Amino acid sequence: TPVTLIMSPLDDLCKENSLPENVKYLLNLAHNNTRKLHELITKLLDFERVDTFRQNLKLNSIDLNDMLAEEIAGFQSICDKKQLHLSLSLPESEVYIVSDKSMLSMLLDNLISNACKYTKANGTVKVSLSVNNRKAIISVEDTGIGIPKREQKKIFNEVFRAENVGNTKEIGTGFGLLQVNRIVNMLNGEIKFESQENRGSKFTITFKRVDEKPDEKDRITIVQRESEEITHTLGKEDL
Image (tube, rainbow, N blue to C red; front, side, top):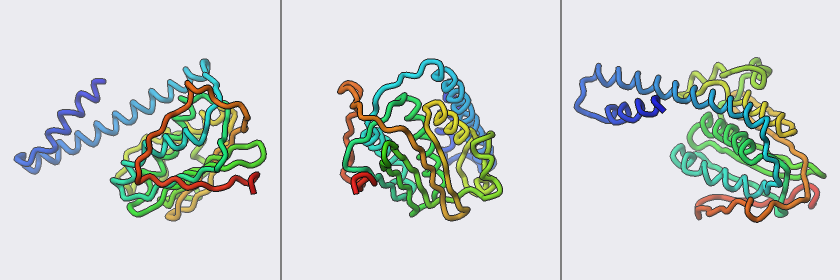
């Protein structure tokens, strides 16, 4: 996109050490605002994509164990750079749901990305999957900045960024959790959360569990790094 073409030379210029301090300041200002614009455009396009997908959902059986392992692998390098402890807890048995893979991926990306963005160095981001009767339960939990109690009622109903986010250097648009709620509703799931400011947040998504296995062509192949932590726990129905 044109914004991406602007960002690339700005990235290069910001690395120049020979520039006067006042020029560096102005370049960094332009660079940061261009990044914000790029993020906003990306979120708006994603917002539009959800409306498009609403009419053309491709529902298939999905192995949540595989899908979550893929998500964790994708965020591992980001967490390494931020010195975050990222973990995944899975039941020993495979867990299947019927869903749209693209929409489910967008949903998980939003939640895990938020957890990583708003958790400080040496903090923890934990993703887990459990089962309860005929329900599949995904939770994304962090030890991040949390959401102030007075603002929690807003997060699924409007474009929103909490006041305490301003104390971080993270760029955001406020669309993320509104998008998450829309996708959960589209996929006939349920979402809830609990959060304490300066203690962290936990988002829990519940889907109906099915017995139908995915077609082999739809299964996700994962190549995990040796450093990636995968822990296995028994689901409630296995106890």
